[in-house]
Length: 114
Image 1 (cartoon, rainbow, N blue to C red):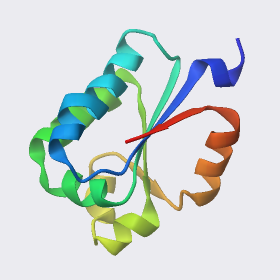
Image 2 (image 1 turned 90 degrees about the vertical axis):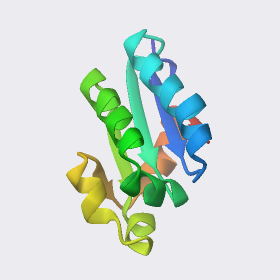
Image 3 (image 1 turned 60 degrees about the horizontal axis):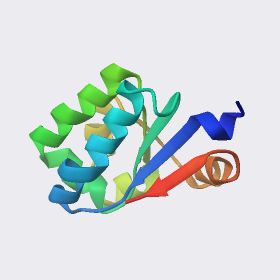
């Protein structure tokens, strides 16, 4: 199996809490727990960074993803715009500039956005 066939990147940019809880987080966590994808990465991008920084329920769910082995990343530029980079790092998220990494992911992996 190739890397692309086994790798999923979920880009979460929506500031909609219901979308996060009822779809994005649920699918991402189950993708890893149920072995639908071997390598699962979750990217916090845009308005989702602000929502995550203040929502404790989402933060707890995110920790479940991390504990299951989902790799957590966030766009530094976006997080800086919302002044939440430090908070996201406290949550165990690798906050970095994501333009180049996302471009590589798009070329080499399966990417879905919400």
